[in-house]
Length: 487
Image (cartoon, rainbow, N blue to C red; front, side, top):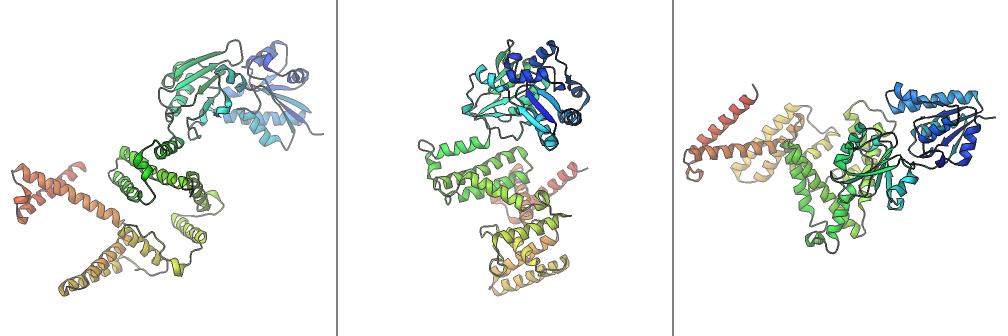
């Protein structure tokens, strides 16, 4: 006959919140364990002479709650091997915000019969304490699981067991990433007991309240919450009747220039190493994704959820070395697997779709992708010397074309293509290299103009030789500044 572990809920308050059946069973039990005696119902049972053991000592011994719960499971596993029936009692409802019970079910269900006895949870008196209707939607989250937990601010948020000011401070900081500092918050004490209190405060002053092991923090729905759901809602409003006339007029085609522009502004922020601006520009780029998704949803083409589903499934599928059992030793193998998986996904026919790149790519990027593609077939120089020699060869052909006055554009393109090939061997991004050179040229030209103006000159009135003098001065000043910044 298999032994039985009874998991009993003590309810949120005193004996009055405990079911009569559970009370009778626990009074008749021979082997009883409480997760903690720091609970009103537990204290009343002790005054009735109930003989129990608690795991309160583990909270002082272990470095984390997870270690405490693991210790509880180990002890109860041992007890269940000795006694035919063991009772384990926890505050509230056994399966509401009770990690130790989850671990017991996961680890002991095959060894013993686990009977979970339902009880009132702390949520039952909470719903009436602050007139909260759960049909409006609510999230129940532990204080240590608030980050990246899907909080949108659109629903009620309930955080149990915020038992001291330090935890309250951590909760406040986590929530202020989603909610406004002035958002309304409830601090509820001793739910369901005669000592019950409901305090209202603003989020920024949350940690200034009083806390104990019977404290629950609740935030009502907040319209100003920062979340992906909020951005989607804003975009929908802008496109709706009564929204923005300009936004309402846009189509996938009309939005194309803005997608390109925002992408380049992101690149500019990265090159300037301006992280504050980068955050803003990434937001602008994200808006373009949301904009296209909203336009598509209105046309019945797809929804934003389809965009998420597509990229989530793709990332998991193309990273079998992370989410599967494939083993890789370096990034080269990762890229090789990526290409193989991509080819299998698209059913790609190399002879027909070898160069299946977007035609709108910048020319230098298109050249790099094309060269990398053919290099996989071995059609490539063995080293940079061959590539450099090809550059000189193309320069000579360009010079000859200029002399003949024919084929200049073609030879110029060949020269650029050869330089791009050389950049691959030098492990440089040609797009970045040219962009940095343009930036350097612009800085020097502005400095040259300033130097001339400081001497009362106007560039428009200077000869090329005269401007060259100021150009060399600008170069020298720039180099001196670099030396000064790198002693």
